[in-house]
Image: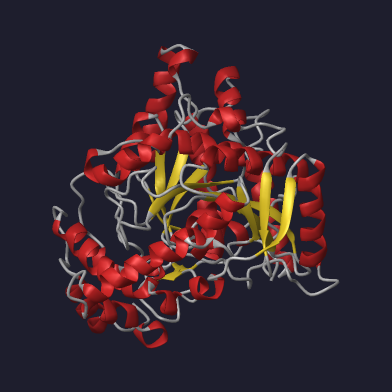
Length: 507
């Protein structure tokens, strides 16, 4: 394994020293890329070639990408031509930048959109997803589709652990045997391993925050509706959201600026959330002193790691760092219904999601211009007909079966949805308001369900590495529209800690 790691690192270094001397491809930020474009040390074409090389060399090991865009180089060449013919003022932060998309985000091009499933291979969408349309308007290059837990981890009761039939088993680039988490597995792995400049993931409950945490990258889960879900293979319109996964807070924020806003195909949600978008965008909140005077609450029990472990020591140091940079840290806060919230079955989350999934997925499938399957029932039948390829014996499809057995949003589902709203209102929302908090803080994605129930935002930031070298993170969450203060906190924390390092591909 040591030899494999040396070969991988040698390949990375050799590739980095490619055709653009003076430009450092590894860990290149959007700011560095922009400067490279301006001073001529790099081009979009060179960037795409670099990332395609990374994918070609690393993907057999990591399984982060399911498909690369055959038109990516052509798009890059077009971006380079546009840059040559226009002034700097007309070129935005994402112009010519390669972006990997989770495989449930639709693109109307030669790429597939399958949620990792063979059942949707060859299907054709009528239009780009709303966020993709915005990325294209910003000049971004669609590099390809990233792997994911098949069907966003909503097929099997035991979970698929970063596996899909199309992409295989995603692997953590830091410790190959460590869980990569999901369902935005591929975007997080790809961002961590420098297989794309930036990536996009989606979250219903933990699917951005968890893989970002375990792969040492930054993930922003926006307030539900802040970004369009049109053209995204759905689970629930109440909880689904699309957000960036990048190597730095600044990069994630620049991507967020590009993808937020109203979309007529997701009108109700994006119209309601548009009120939260600040004039001038989110970049203005990248403040080095962003922790100053912030009130940050620590939920009781979440940081209770065993004495002497790396996590226990690091988290203690990081909470002190937050204090030293001007924040008021309020510890031992209790959410009265925390146990109920964290048990999704008791809380009714699965009851609600199962019914919503069938309705939303069938609507998505019916809108496709072509598809081998047109309903959840047909997908279940496809899996039964292809048990080996879809690993039916290993994972099953119990949630699919539960969902197919639902008959719409009836009294039981309405009661469950009402309960979820009450749990959130009387839980984290009440806590934040009572203590006048700017954010709650938690290790990794341990507060993901707390944030999921009412579509609340969160940001995961790298915090350290355990005894085996596996990454862990710290997450900040808040109420709807709290993105500005969460960005201030996350950016200031990142700049004060600066713990992220390159993957080591340990066994």
